[in-house]
Image (tube, rainbow over all chains, first blue to last red):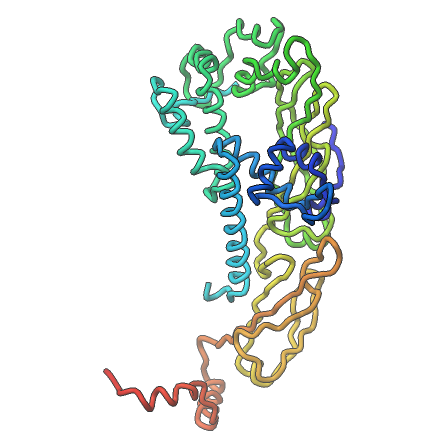
Length: 108
Length: 320
């Protein structure tokens, strides 16, 4: 079987995305992304930029939102709430992970 | 082809109504969806649940599934020969498709290719896989072998299972939970559409000595009581090799000794830090001369580790 050697890209290091690129990579249409933006679920890097540019974090959020919409039939408001809660869970888990890393192993 | 019992997967009777099927799917999706669940094997379970729902929610597909007959879950079976008509080809082989692919062909395959012969460009599917790497691989960079069995569409829009192997070169600086993107390595585009992307979720394997947070590392540094009191120099393992660490006299348990830039490298340059967390450990058994020396120390030392209790102790009444 042919084995391809391939380089990977850091999502964080990827160049900023236009709305059209974000749409192509996430599966949403541009109108749906504008709706998500209006709900605060995704945000451009600099609101004063025209046309708007989005960071890699937005791509992760938009891809998650796309899966949640398809699998749970959520509307845009529901998606915005789910994404906000998932973001809070990620932040709390990161904080717990950091505190756990500092606990000496024997008393854990 | 392996048979899957879609009714059993959703936990419903074969006579279940569409509403009962939908309710069962929603309940299981909430439990196993990989974006919201931390349960073991949640992703695989969700895939089965979603596959079952995709077929049973569609009356045409459900009727066709029921027509297949009943087998044991996991039992090998072949669809009846007349099913080849769904693939528009009487010589179609069922060897490289699975049960979900069969039902996708009930319109889905043709829809992808475009109805009435339209050639609509469609972007290939994105794939997401977990890449397990060691701390050493994260520190030095790694080549990770990825073997995927993925659905791919032929020129007529029908799906087949194909094995694809990649060797992905992950630059140093990856850390737990990070996502990487390999552009163009997802599913093939159709009718001139671009190929999809492959996403890698990095999962770092636990290390027996180092604990990780972001690009910083933590290691326990056990010291004997006299080493903590008098100070010492210890040889400390780090991902980049052994270093000599000077422990100052009077070091306390729980103190973090920071070794700058000895953590994991960061993708955009720079390194995390390594923290040695001091633990004072004592021998569980002491005997002979060592015991005598501890006795002498106890008698002569003026150190009171509980001096800060004094005020409370003098105010409090003694209880038994």
